[in-house]
Length: 81
Image 1 (spheres, rainbow, N blue to C red):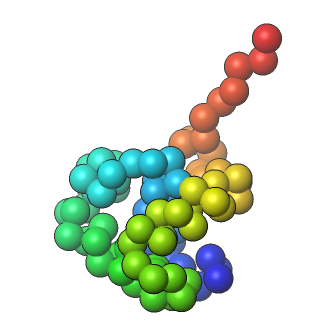
Image 2 (cartoon, rainbow, N blue to C red):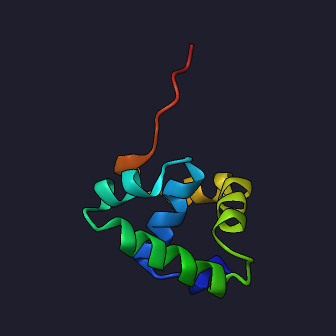
C-alpha cells in the first residue's frame, strides 16, 4: 500500500512514474543515487513487488494517483486551448 511509504520514498515513486532515472531523481532530491537505490529496494519490499523493474511498472500504472500526490509546485500545468 502506498500509505506505508515515507515522504521521501513517495517522492521517489512519483519521479519513477514520471520516467526519471535514478541519477536524475537523486539530483532533484539532492541525495545520492545509492540512496535512491535503497529507497527503491525498500519500496519494492513494502509494496510486495518483485524488484525495481516491477516497482517502476507499478509507478507508471499508478501515475494518475501519484500526480494527485505531487506537491503543487511540481505539478505540470496543462494548456487549455
